[in-house]
Structures are given as structure tokens and as C-alpha cells.
Image (cartoon, rainbow, N blue to C red; front, side):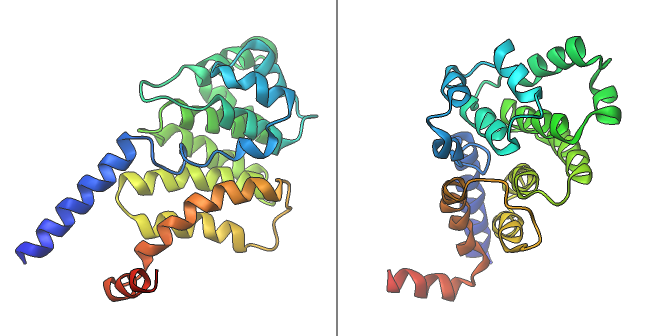
Length: 217
């Protein structure tokens, strides 16, 4: 019994350390690298949502996967960012939304997905609001692979915080296995996502299976 308690304690500490170091679904899936030569992605490398980039994100003529790559490239930091607030201010000024609640009520699927991902990256320790926005976005475009995988990454982040690591794997794997989705994201981007996310599969194995996998190398 004591060994079990010690094991669970150590597991929790390792999980906490992973999160504190930025090792998580939102921070370790750098799929923007598949779009490295796109001008908007290059500009996003400064880590700040400029007015130009906000305009790019809000323009629905731009491919949704490329806009997600821009947000992914803007990135995160351990002290949080204000990029989600900057995007909301842009939408309020140029799209006429009153506040976040108005955006949730009237926003387009693309606007909501951009807002959800920016919010999640701005504070990946608390993705409660980001999850709410993501669910709203997905309800408006449930057939898009890009919508599903971005929402899955946000939702997987909540499972990391809950130490439910096997579910972290299943959340994004279910998206991969859904053949009904419109494949609107570069295959190369998926490599970057699943190279990291598949690492959580080991936590779905029994202790004996994990031991056997390690033995086989």
C-alpha cells in the first residue's frame, strides 16, 4: 500500500514538473514548422499578435490550418501572454463585438477557433474559458479536421492537469482515426502533433506491458 501511494505521489510530481516546464499538448506540438516558409508564420515568430496578424487571423479567406499555424508560432510563455485580449480588442473594433460573451453568441466558427487557441496558448495552466470557446467553435464546424485537432489539443491539456494521461492520448487519437473529417491540415503538420501526442500511449498500457515494451526497446 505504501509503495502504491509513493508511486502515485511520484507520478503526480513528474506530471507537475512536465507542465511547469511547458511539456504539454499545447506547448510541445510545434506544427507551425510545417508552414515555416509562410510570411504570416514568419512574422508570428516575434511572439506578439500584431494588428497585421490579427487581421490575418480574422480573414476567413486564409486557410484555417495556416491561421492555426500562426497562433502556434506566436507560442506561449510561462508568465502568460495577452494575445487573446489583443485579438478580442481587434474583433471589438473591426467586427463590432461588445465583449467575449457577444463573441461567443455571434462569432463565426473561425473567429471562435482562433480565440480559443489564442486563449489556451496565453494561459495553458487554465484552459477553462478556452475549452468553452473551443466547444462552441467545433459545434459550428464539426466536419473539419483542423477544428477537431485544435479543440482536442485544448481538451487534452485539461487531462494533463488532471493527470489522466491515457485520456490525453485518446483525445487526439480519436481525431486521427475519424475518417469522416475533411483533411484541411498539412500531413507534415500532423507528424509534429502526433510525434509528441503518441508518447502518452504508454500510459494506457498495464505496468507489465510497459515493462515488456521497455525490455524490447
